[in-house]
Image (tube, rainbow, N blue to C red; front, side):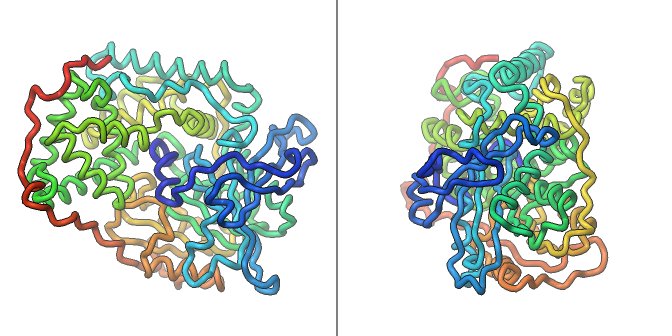
Length: 525
C-alpha cells in the first residue's frame, strides 16, 4: 500500500512490464464503449489479451463535461459460454499501480477455476497508459536525498521544503481538473463505468492492498452490482490515511527484525552476526557510516532503507536481499545495492508516486499542522526507527497538496453478498486488524488467515491451503464457514521461510568491511 508496492507488487504478481495498449482503431470516443484491439506487450499477446481505452467523465458531477481515457485490457474466458461466470475486474494496489498485467492472473488460479471469467486489468485514472497520466518531478526519488531521520531542525526544514516543492510541481505540471478528481470514489465510479461498458449487470473483483479499499468503497456505493470479491491484504478504513501510515511504521519495523533473526540463524551464509541484535547492530553501524560517506557516491542511508524494506513486504525476497546485504556490508558491493534501489526504491517512478499522493491527499484531509506530524512521527520513531521518517517524508507533500480534500466514504458492506478475504497476520503494509475490521463490516465475508506470515498481497502464490480455497470460491462461490466473534474463519499455515543454499568453504570465509572502506563522497543533507 505505498512506496515499494508500485514496483514490487507488480514484480511479485507477474513479472511483465506492460507496454501501451494499441488498438486497431482510434481510442474509444463514445462514452461507455471500448474499441478493442491487439496489445503490444509480449506477455499479454501470449495470453491472448486485447487492449483498448474507455472514455469516462473527468468529473462525474459533470457527466457531459470533459472526458479522460482509462486503459483497459481483457483475457477472455476459456470455457463454453454456458459455464461463463462473468468479468473479473482486478487492481494491484498502490494507489498508483498499473493493473494491466493482472489480466493474465486467471491462469494462475488452480484447477482452471479462473478460466470461467473474463479477466480485466486497467490503469486507474492518472496511471500509466491512461490519459492523461500524472507526473510531477521525475528526479524527486533520485540519489543524494537528505537523510530521512531529521536529527537537526535544518534537516527537517530541508525535507519540508522538498515536500512543498513536489506538491507545487504537481500543481504546475498537471491539469487542475484531474488533480481535483483523483479520489478513490472517482476510480470506483470508473470501475462501474467499466462494468457498464462490458455489458455486465454484476462485477467480480480481485483486489490487492489498496485495491481492497477500492473493493470496500465499490461494495458500499454499488452493492447491487457485486457478485464475488477476493480481497488480499485488507486496508483498515478507520485509519485512512494518516493513521494507517503510522500503523505501518510499527509493523514494518517488526518484520524487519524478524528478517534480522532469520539472517542470524543463517550466519554461515550471510556472516552478519549470530544473533538478531548482532545483525541489527551491524545494519545500524552501516547506516551511520553511509550518512557520512555514501557507498560509491550513490548508496546512502535512504537508499539502503528503501531496499531492505522489501524484506518487510515479501518473504520471497529474503534470499535476494540477504545476499545483497551480506555482499554490501562484508565485501563493499555497492553496485548490487544500487541496482536493487533502482528496481525497488521508486527511482524514476514519478507517475506512481504522483498518483499515490493525488489519491491519498484528497481522499481525506491530512493534519494541516506540521507540529502534529512532528510529534506523532517522533513518538512512533521511538518504537519503529527504521521506516517512520521514510514514510513521513513520503507522505509529507499532503501538507501542501494543491487540490481540495474530501471526506472518506463510511465503508458498509451489509449489501455485499459474498467476499473471500486473505491476509497474513504479520502483513506490514496492511496490518491484520484491518482484515478483522472489514470482516466485521461485511457479513457476507469469510477470512483466511496465515498465522505469523509476513508477506503482503501475493495470492495465488503456491500455498495449497489458500489457493485451493480461492479456486473453490471462484468456481462455486463456496466460502469457509463463518466463525463467531472477531476472528479469522479458517487458518492456513504460511509458506515456510526460505532456506539459503549450503555455503561453500570459500563463501564461508568472512570478509568484514573495514570502517574506511566506504568511498569518501559526502552525503548531501
